Amino acid sequence: MITTEEIKKKIEKNIPNSNAEVFAVKPDGMHFKAIVKSKKFEGKSLVEQHRMIYDSLKEEFKNGLHSLSIEIKE
Image 1 (cartoon, rainbow, N blue to C red):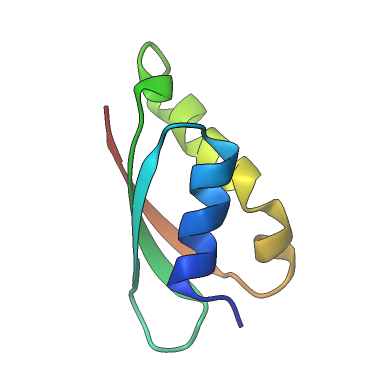
Image 2 (tube, rainbow, N blue to C red):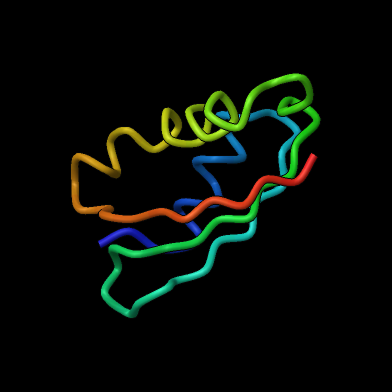
């Protein structure tokens, strides 16, 4: 089971100079919400921004992470 802190660290590691806040949506360890702020998102489409986040969590999605709601802040 993945934790909010592990998701936060993965996002911030893979998107340099980002700031992520991660919350559990359900207490099942599979449903989360992330609010991510990064200048790396500037000039990118919403799909590209979300892909950057999902790419940083590929292994987690293979191993039980089921849902991640994303809010982007530039």
